[in-house]
Amino acid sequence: MSNPIKLLIIEDDKEVSTFLKTNLNRYNFLVNTARTGQAGLNLIKKNNYQLIAIDLGLPDIAGDKVCQIIREHQKMMPILIISGDERTGSKTRLLDLEADDYLAKPFSLEELIARIRALLRRPPKIDPAIIKISDIELNRQKQIIKRGNQELYLTRKEFLLLEYLINHANSVISRTEIMEHVWNNNADIFSKTIETHIFRLRKKIDYNRPKPLISTISGRGYKLTY
Image (cartoon, rainbow, N blue to C red):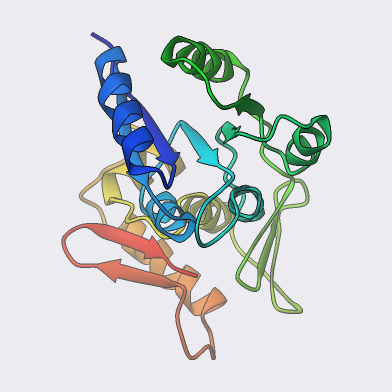
């Protein structure tokens, strides 16, 4: 059997949320649930989901605002909006916020699964040329890094390392993951290469800053926090 597909459902109705989680798990989906927008955003910081379903009527942060925040943080997984509001204007507004699809309540489990599978079959979205996180701006096309108004010089490996950490911000990244994605499988994982590059990267982006962006998580790896 293939690996389960990791989904997040942000839905405040406990009965609906439990029903969806229980039944989707039977179709090889690994489902996390959140009942508020903030709880959902906290889970997104810690996990890499392949798709997120968001109900519009959340008690704290409106579902459309949650969608907007996700996209502002450069998270490019498919987003499915769920709502009882079937007005065309609402659908258009949500798609303008870069939601990928809209499903009106009430819906059947079969229809939800069909929508999820259709979204997962779509080609992945092209990563933006410019990534902004905290006060850092990373320009992929020009290979330029700025922090605040200051342009920083990074070597190619330092640039790739920072890019990888930014793409997985707020998650702990192991040395093995860094070695596989920034270097290559032939690199020596027991060498001090990663430590040396992390040290140099910190000196450049965290210089004279009261709170460092990159931290070492003992025994686990590294984490870029914003």
